[in-house]
Image (cartoon, rainbow, N blue to C red; front, side, top):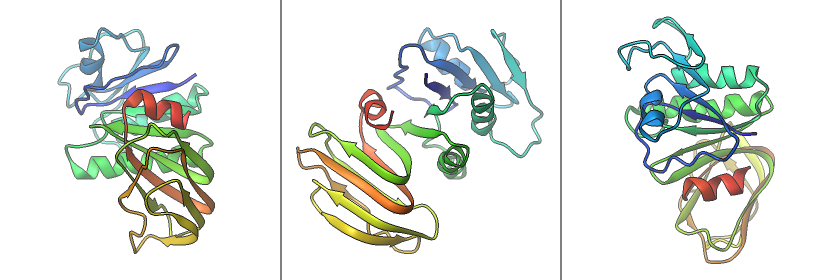
Length: 210
């Protein structure tokens, strides 16, 4: 089962897989209800919402805290045993919150979970060793960044710019702006973590990551 978390940034492409457990992070409750979706859980300090909403289940936190509302929702999902997370409403707006949500993908990996951060037609996920595969239908660009000091054994096949057993660091963006070529493709890393960004619908991104 997938844990879907919806935060405050507006998102038109709000795909929620059947059977998902849905968490609203603070103002994200408005997005969900506008789509006719009632969240299973509402979490936050509710400063951006301006009031404490009625909900099936609600967890309220103080405004002064270490975690973002997205992180609070992720922690609740992990406590409930979920290991697949689809995160909406975390891209765009304030850059510091966007970066915090990207780091949340790393937090999920450290806790044995997989996260997909989606917004504005862009999907992001973190690859910690292993391979991710894209179908021939994938279009647009895909970028790969080292998430950590160094990623070794990076290979990209079926893309416009192939890469074979390369090493990436966090000081040089060698993997930025590759392109799909209407054929099956893949990106793999032997050691280290890679942050992947590509253009996609939310549904197609879910099928790739989960």
